[in-house]
Length: 343
Image 1 (cartoon, rainbow, N blue to C red):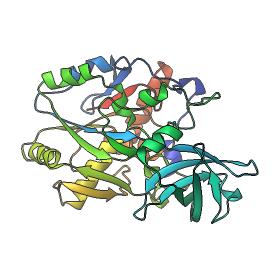
Image 2 (image 1 turned 135 degrees about the vertical axis):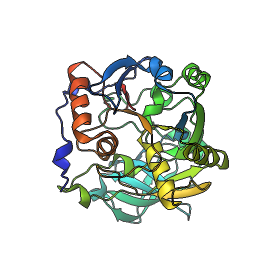
Image 3 (image 1 turned 45 degrees about the horizontal axis):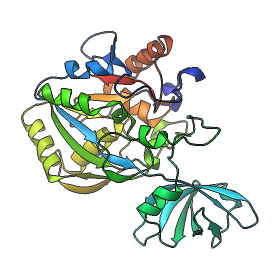
Image 4 (image 1 turned 180 degrees about the vertical axis):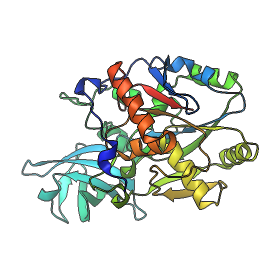
């Protein structure tokens, strides 16, 4: 039985990055599964770690300013984290403090509009409806960058976070958390990867609750992932299938690209079909990867589904040993931290 405790490790608080290093300058820990130990490099060395013919698969989702503040006319304040739009024009959202909320009540927003609390959906989630209807332009005006709680901003989110917490190739709005492995790339680094003879391809997976929801159960098998939406264009589906057909390595940028790729291959019986899909795939040690050949990722939280995914690819013992060395040698952890390359 695989236990959640098996993926715990000691992490001093000072190792949690509170702001990003200048883009393109982060450290890179390289774990080559064919050799013992790890190498300490820079993200600028990534092109040299790749091979002509590789396919680099990136997630072009764009983070929306999904954190909103609302209040009752009596003064009580609420915080909403938008998760996803629903088919009827309403939204699914986390609400705090949820225990203080009542179905049917309306809360005031900063621009004079209102949000209606329609019905609770469990685990702190609510179906909500905006009056007037929420547009992306309106959300950009009243929402905040949804930084994770371990990045502390006592004075509030900084204006710089709106750009820092976004990849340079983000183009499809809808994520409530960044695909953080992609934050390391500059345009120049992408050009250097291409010059190496590596093919670039983009998918979209809107990062949602399934990625960052904590594991609270004792047995890993009892945890359930939430669905996340993804899309493969015809061009990217063709590129992925061609790489698989010719035995070329697919290098995923981030765990979100892994979940989208493996979810699509599972649903397509080993092929990626163009179009939309949903995945609740929970990748843990013992999982047999269909398409992932290598992975660029950040350092993840203890006991998290993301650490379990990485351990499925490289082995729990090797990953935890690499994490221990990363802690000892001063690597920066989590969303604004350094990177790890698994070959």
